[in-house]
Amino acid sequence: MHSRFLSALPVLLLAACAALPAQVMRASSDEVALTGSPQTNNVPYTLTRTSTIVQTLANGATITRTFTVKSARDTEGRTYSEEHLTLPGNPNRQPSGVVNYRIFDPVARTNIAWSSRTKIAYVTHIPVQAAEVDAARLPQTARAPTHVKREDLGVRTIAGIEARGTQITAVVPMGEVGNDQPFTIVTEEWMSMQYHIPLLTIRDDPRSGKRTDEVIDFQPGEPDPALFRIPEGYTVLERTAAESPLGTP
Image (cartoon, rainbow, N blue to C red; front, side, top):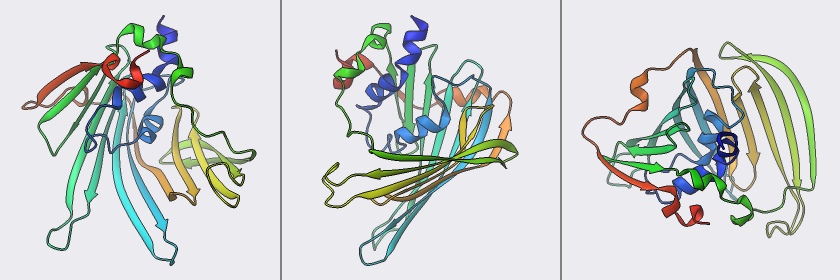
């Protein structure tokens, strides 16, 4: 049963996160992918990652967004992330900062999220039977690009960790997502084989722009246990994943 639960973690995370408020869930599923996966060996670490997203508009103007994420994983497989964002202000207000937090505990089967903008922590319990949800019942995404080319980029050191690089070039055919012409998505990923995490990812997608995620600080070893506790002074709201539409068989 435990292995079946781990194999269903991506489905469970999607179900658990569906009902959380938008301001808390600004940290996307990309963060889940960057902090761990069912295939990780649970080697403990703490890291800091910077992300930059550059969107180019039709007139050539660009919009640039940057944020910082601190992540950690312990030997029990628990993952922690805190995402520091700067929200744009209107003409009469200065930009404001917000920090979003998330903890995933595969042993306790809980997904916890809270934000610095509120004093509410949302705890989603994932029941054992939720692991039996058939992924085929979830909405299907678009088909994978037809033409995909993979290139081995060799080995390099990033933040003191050895990583192997791969470049994936995918061509999305005309009409695949409503596009009247083919377009190309290029992803460059440098993966640590020891820790099973990407240390540098560069994804250039004409639909969303160019995103660069890079680990700038890496500390091996057990993270601070306090990271995996809800801070004092927060109201805790609890629910189960089965209450989410995506988690209901």
